[in-house]
Image 1 (cartoon, rainbow, N blue to C red):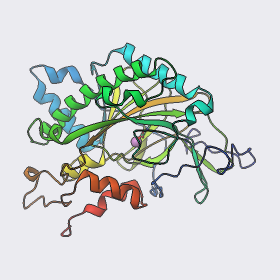
Image 2: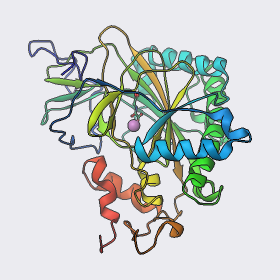
Image 3: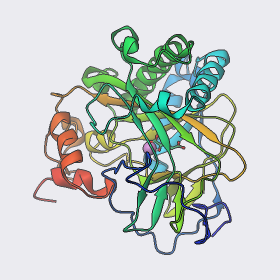
Image 4: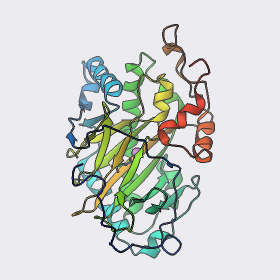
Length: 351
Ligand code: OGA
Ligand code: NI
């Protein structure tokens, strides 16, 4: 195991806080860590890189093919020339850092364990049964359209609403463009996925530098898939993201000004498993804190999510029944299972 992996913590280290006293009370629905026997945890990955400018030019179909190939083979890819100005990226990352450097009482105003609230702060938590400390702190909020939600966002730091709003509006355009290309890569109409698209939810993730815990293993965020169509992740310059490819963990190190796109659960269902939801996690860094901005793009509540009819034939029977996003979302919070198994509840019987 590489020395940075999951950050082993000595048992004699002081505990940060007891769950009942401190902020570490949130428990997530990711109650199982998938067992990954035989996984090499130290492989340096090579990230497929897509130049988004290519989607605007005469070679669009070639770039669509590249995106389809990356979704099918890797479940993720990096995008450069996405059109989000560097200044907006830096402003977003600076604002995120400023927010998490505010006094705790200021941040805790946004704490909520209700997954349906418009905005909520999620703190680190201890899973004592598995001896795991999950150190990620995140501020999660709805942001599309920006004007409908921004009054509920923090007003401190003072630039929060403006800078975060600018980033959210820009990243939304990237999402729409990528979803169009993904639709086409599946042989579907360009607006197939766009038609069911609704919200956009951002998670500002903050990973303090190597927090201590009495528990054996500290994760940034543990292994999971995202319940989204796609997720667009913007990382600062501190490595931490890892993904599973070909049954191996690989590091997805930050590429300046590029974003990383993940296949999420909804795209797995819609593509009839041609594109698989990406298993990923974040490790902590002992020297530096880390910030990432995850933009989760999800369908409207009543959107029918089963496999696209065009992708079903005798050789490719439907792997999932039709279900609505609302049904999926409710079951996600009700049924405590590993995220990698949550789509199994909607599997077609013949499978
Ligand atoms: C997430 C996530 C990884 C990271 O926010 O869903 O997986 O590197 N983040 O922050
Ligand atoms: Ni994720």
